[in-house]
Amino acid sequence: MGLSGLSTDFDKAKTHALKFLSYRDHGGGELLAKLGIHYEPETAQKALEWLRELGYQDDRRYAEKLAALLIETKHYGMRKARYELKAKGLPAEIIDDVLDEYYPEDVIDILTELIERKYADKLDDNDYSGVKKTVDALMRRGYDYGDIKTAISRVKEDLELEDDG
Image 1: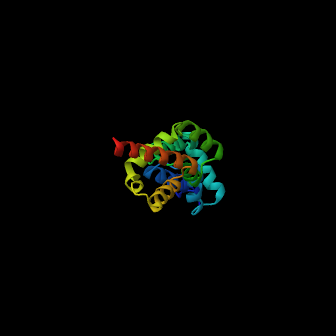
Image 2: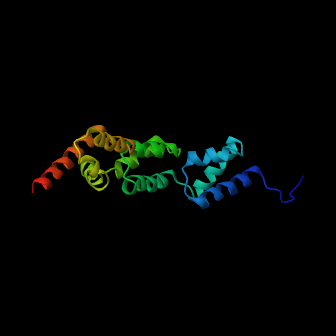
């Protein structure tokens, strides 16, 4: 064939990978999965290594940005944040490091604030279903049951104090 300007699969994979990154940042595992649809695993891996050498893809940087979004903006709990990071193909050791950095120490305070803002009206009645709905919603966000119960108790105490005062 010669050098007639035809691209190799590696060149195509690099272009494809850059296109993915132009839309949004990706984890390495996520990029490999997307590239693996169109290219051989070795070609996809080479393209990922090329991106990393140029600094276009960095699992740690991506994990930090995603963890900040999930924990600080979406108010996800540890379990849900870990699940979401893992789903993006990030290595377990990076996930552990990043969550240790970003996960707040005052989970009960954060939960209390979240309950007061979004769920306090469900706790007004003495009916169990409102509490159950609140617990279920917070469990889906990835919070631990014990933390949720403690925060609900705190909010209920605050509501009772307001009613009395």
